[in-house]
Every structure is written in C-alpha cells, then in structure tokens.
Image 1 (cartoon, rainbow, N blue to C red):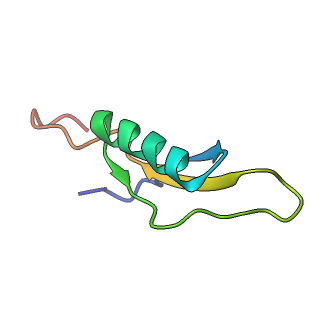
Image 2 (tube, one colour; image 1 turned 45 degrees about the horizontal axis):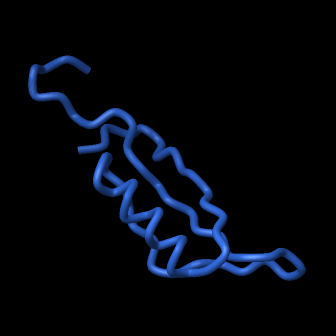
Length: 65
C-alpha cells in the first residue's frame, strides 16, 4: 500500500534502448519500481530517455509509519 505518498522518479539517459532497459533492470533488483515499457527520443538530442518511478519508503512490517 502506498499511503498517499508521491512516487519519486528518475530520468535515465542512455545511448540506446538496450542500455536504458539494462539500467532499469539493475535498479529493479534493488528497489520497487514501476517499469517503463518504452523510451523517449527528444528531437535534436542524442540517445534516449527513460523515466522510472520507484518507492523510497516501502511499507514496514513493524507498524512504524
């Protein structure tokens, strides 16, 4: 349960889709993320961008907020 907190996000810049999704996989191993399904190319900018949303404060089992 998220308890109304906003999901923080990171923007990943990479040379290509393969590299961007590899970074996503590495981050997913260490924290809860909402995986992106596609990358974005900015006109006039090199490479691709990927926006990842992740949870910094997972629910705790000990009852603490």
